[in-house]
Length: 171
Image 1 (cartoon, helix red, strand yellow):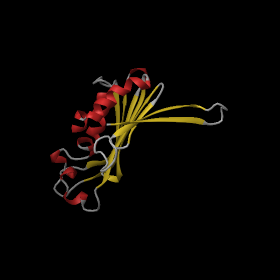
Image 2 (cartoon, rainbow, N blue to C red):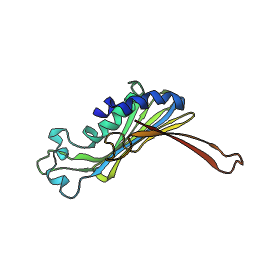
Image 3 (spheres, rainbow, N blue to C red):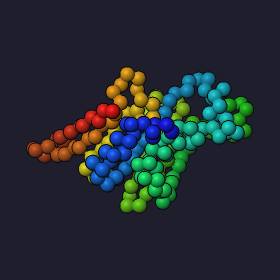
Image 4 (cartoon, rainbow, N blue to C red):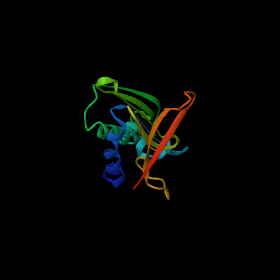
């Protein structure tokens, strides 16, 4: 969870006040482990606390907890979408997982993690007046400008389209 200690994350937390009260958090962290992943990767062994909830999901959960200033949700609903295991594993582990953390006033943090999906590492925080988007919240893209986007969308003057305004915050 070293992503929390970066300059970018500090700037992100400071920018939350620009989007108003948080309405929803959405996070995804996935990679495709390939055909041998089930056979020999330690993440697939239940005796080693394997599976998405103990690996990729933790990054999503921590992101949400920090955004919510460590406030715990009122309830969590979690679903194992797929499972697998190494031959040595006593039980199957979650290889695709989703959860919803419900907070007071209707705020929800939805997360998805998978060992069998295209590499995805994004986050979106939707507020009353804006949205902050990361497309690389944990592992910054190589050669990319490090930062995040703040979007403020509004109905167009003619009422038939949405005017999209995006401010890039580079670190």
